[in-house]
Length: 111
Image 1 (tube, one colour):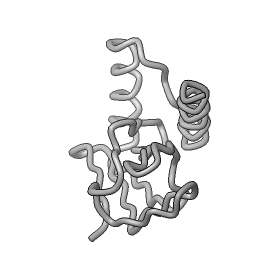
Image 2: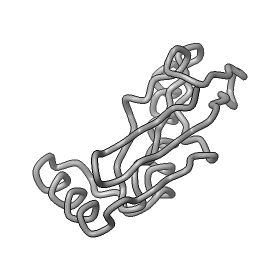
Image 3: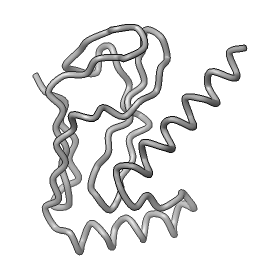
């Protein structure tokens, strides 16, 4: 069963399978992986995964992002950033770089 992420009427993302590049854990659901760090960008929902086995944080490349209503998504992303103070993520790459930074910070805290 694939992982599915939806913002009603705005965007959706599907991931068929997840493999942790650090420890090799493989899964198709949230049993082995947490998706709490997932972000919404102007590209759509970008899933950020944390492996429950080793703690690695990463953005799977094989995500299928779909935007249902581009103008409403853009408006929602800007509004959410304003209201929450969270950074605005313009695209997939911006979210990936943020995930890499989180992972680096997590690893430095372990040492």
